Image 1 (cartoon, rainbow, N blue to C red):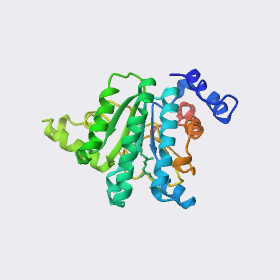
Image 2 (cartoon, rainbow, N blue to C red):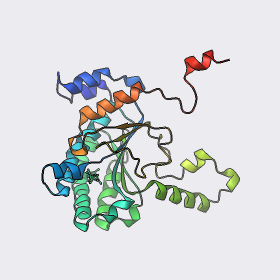
Image 3 (cartoon, rainbow, N blue to C red):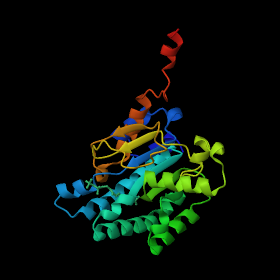
Image 4 (tube, rainbow, N blue to C red):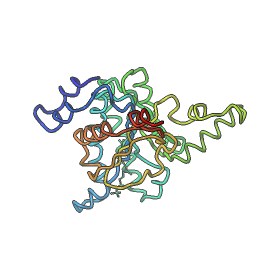
Length: 262
Ligand code: FPP
């Protein structure tokens, strides 16, 4: 996709267009990962039950997925449910699962229209059979799409993923000497995908919350005070622009300084 694809979808003359036109399309982050936070606070501010925050958060998911695909990201990963989220009240968990199921049913046509490939990452074997069925159907129906890869992290934990990868590596028959960082990454849920260049967290919290711990080693982190249900295309574009202003050194030093160092 491209700037034109994005411009034809966003309101003309608005803040989104002004932001979109500032983006350097040849320096996009390949992979953006988002910790969607603040649904409960959004609902609380409106004296609504917490689940209303999650319900409103679905509109943000819809907007961000289509913006990302039109912009031309290679991968978008959304953190929808962590291994720790089972501690929440049963009604909140069942509503989240129901919303996810409904999202997949209603948005499949959007995923197909935008050539998006859908994948779920996490310990999916612990999910209810009806949810699994829905997830697998969406993966299957979008499997031949060649555009953006959209990962939903579900029953996901970064440490759990690393343990799962270590188990797979041991079971594969590789000897300790054969294992290096690249080979190990091939046992993660995200095998074959580029690491996130940009990690976005909403609602102002400065935590990584056990999300993609291995993969975010060199990600740029951008935190916005905006609560997830208020997060839209405009905010994603702001995050990408902030990313493009960063000086990524990957542990080295910036080239002009390096050139002057004796
Ligand atoms: C964090 O807000 C949000 C979640 C735990 C769930 C996010 C899920 C959705 C937006 C819906 C389903 C997702 C998809 C991809 C269809 P919080 O409840 O922790 O908020 P708080 O910190 O304000 O309490």
